[in-house]
Image 1 (cartoon, one colour):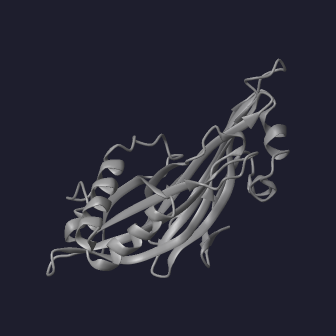
Image 2 (image 1 turned 60 degrees about the horizontal axis):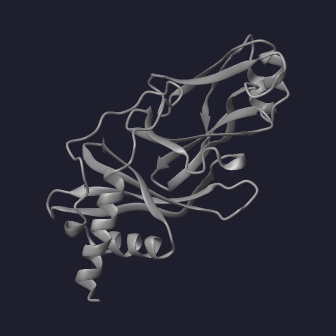
Length: 252
């Protein structure tokens, strides 16, 4: 197969799979940035580095599952993510790879800006959500991050988790990882409880916005949340509320 034909096959696979992606669910209230003028990536006009990288991921078994277009510093960009199962039988999750491309008006091409062979391992126990629900969000003026949300459970108990990965000049940086954002015991015969931990960006003059946290729920949810694995977040909450600030690449 010639190089030109190989790239054509990659383009068909890539565009076809991405166009079939379903719209993700809610992302905990963090404001979503609108689409740019683009609705698709034309890989036939992408530069060689983009094509070679995508080819290597697809040959390794990754499949495109998410795309988003945005504008940063008046430059049109595209986030593209691919995933594959990590192969763990007891608690499967997805290994996520991807890149940010920028559109060069003078060359009429998509060019690679950043790429990573290991953005995050995301998904939940017992495979309820193996490929995470994903959304690009604004976390500052011309600052963006990716929300990875998933849900899992067992024996009647369920838990939602969220990770937040910032897109920076250095690459993809995880600023919140595997945070418990909800839970319930809807599958048990016990007294019912449920809770939701929401995250909302607070617009300001800061480079990265603070995040306002709000814990709400029903039944004995406060005890259940404190007993969860998020000891740090639970310790920050006062009357169910807290504010996290972005410091040295992390929200603390």
